[in-house]
Image (cartoon, rainbow, N blue to C red; front, side, top):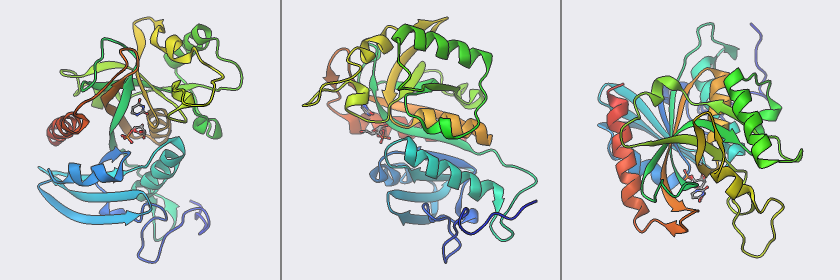
Length: 290
Ligand SMILES: O=P(O)(O)O[C@H]1O[C@H](CO)[C@@H](O)[C@H]1O
Ligand SMILES: O=c1cc[nH]c(=O)[nH]1
């Protein structure tokens, strides 16, 4: 097994990984990722005990116990580029020996659940409701840097999406299925649909303030997309990268989002904090019983 060099796997003075500043023994097998660093204590306040707290840049993490489960809640910041850092470093903590710098012979699969906020692309999915993403469809280009293979089902949905939207070669969308084992637990109380990930909040999500858009019809095209029972429920800025990298690395991933904006009804939640609190408590309850 070859040794990974100091420039590739960067370990700081206290034995923590470079960006996350977490040590291998400080990571739970169950990881909740949230975009907003301020959301980390809103999750960990429901832990039965907190054992570790770390912070470096936007990556705040608390690790503790929920029932008999060791759980880490970690903020990712915004966007697929941050997910590249978070997922490679989480996987290194789980699957690389920090003393020998070699990949472990037995690989660990983490349960990784995103608890995020999102915009709805269907009038029937109102603000303050919850979506569990069946697939992550990326309009970002992160996965193009990795050797990804796709299932026939993923390829068929992606081809139908490209045909329906008439998207040009400047965009290279990709799609990955959610972790089915986790999704099976998040049924009642959740809408299910494809979560689209955009590499921006404004232009890529069709918002116009002062700049005109290259793809002004993209939101409409996403709303009307249908393929063999699959449709696009919502969009945000991390899920495609979470499902894409999580799948390549062998982790079980699920993206849960509280809808705070409905882009079709043009409404915005009046109490997003309550919706988020409900999603957090429900997720922890289900996680503790997995
Ligand atoms: O609330 P979080 O988890 O950050 O998620 C959503 O909110 C941010 C944009 O406001 C993006 O990160 C988007 O994915
Ligand atoms: O519309 C929205 C709401 C939350 N997060 C997003 O990325 N978009």
